[in-house]
Image 1 (cartoon, rainbow, N blue to C red):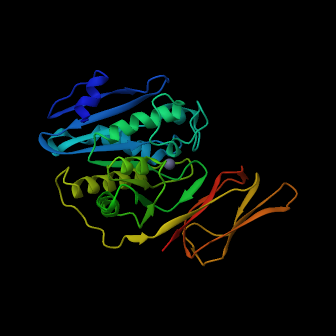
Image 2: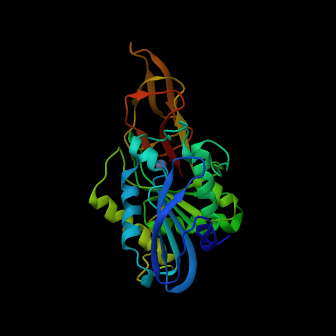
Image 3: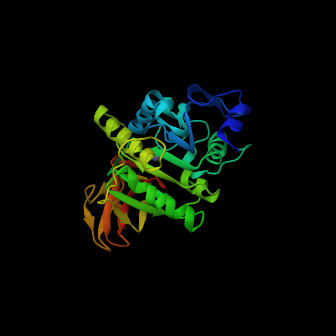
Length: 317
Ligand SMILES: [Zn+2]
């Protein structure tokens, strides 16, 4: 399927040299995803950019809005589809991680289900869009209670060729760290499993956003589009990006209060303590350790923590 075929089915038609705005409905839900289709004047790659899979990640959502506004057909070879944001109900509910209709994390239900819950249906529609594209760029950031360093995740799934392309292009953003993932239920894992290379970018944090962060994010995406040959201009190859082997994500085993022991960006040694959860009487319920040495890529900042919540992640070199 091509973008033209996909948008045809929802009554949106576009042609070369135009910018088209509209909404992508998610059947059986109240969700309508605002999108901008920038169809270049020259043939080229089909690129899907999504912002706001998680509704509380503001720098990436504003970046996607700005890309939709400012990318011009005359500068593009191929077609760029920007979805900004993917999940408007989660955005307006000001929720971290979860969708308001089913309490599910959209980035854990790919490739979705046509007749599933609201989040599964959204994932299904995004998966269809992914299958129309040659490369998928999913913009994220630290969520409402998450502090993080800018980094990029690529999927190791989808075979050597797809994984190698995802890995290489992940460095084009120029964020300090790139880490591989074998998760198969997230947006990039879903794309990779259907043969589409992609990346998931993380910039910004803690329910805030600034014009400077958005500017940095836009320039990072524009550089990636230059590297992919989609827009013209000088492509900067960032040689100083550090590739990490994997990520140890720690999740809460208890509901209580979270006390991290390490600062964001701190180096941690194998076996080192990362934090503990205590009850309201100060009794330690569980303690968390690094399995291998690495760098603290993100850490949850809320004192409140619920069983199953992420706590922090170590990027392992
Ligand atoms: Zn996210």
